[in-house]
Image (cartoon, rainbow, N blue to C red; front, side, top):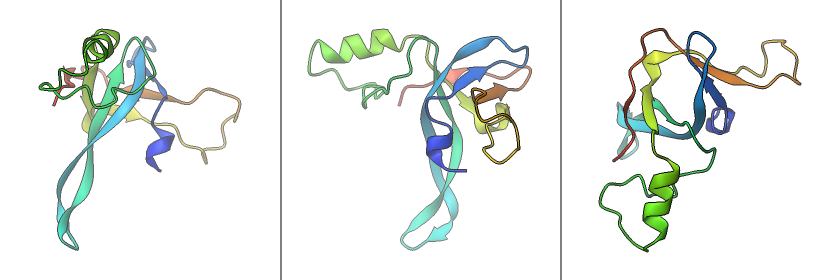
Length: 119
């Protein structure tokens, strides 16, 4: 799987209720060294309930300018949350033999936790 397989994909809870779209991925660098840096590991998915667009870097809590872009982007993404990778039950798979016309979805596990998406 590559990152673009997850971005802009609809997210459902375990009961099939839509909760938003994947707008970003969060990685942590805690794997075995790969050159000078530690290897990256997928930590979770950033899910926005209102829009499919990116945060454009405005999820960082100290970014306030240029005004009025920063507050507008934050307002558009209100309710956005981070779902840890362990809370993901199912992801789209291009090679699973299902109908290619069917919309790919990410399904979250029962009892998943919504963490703050801000950095």
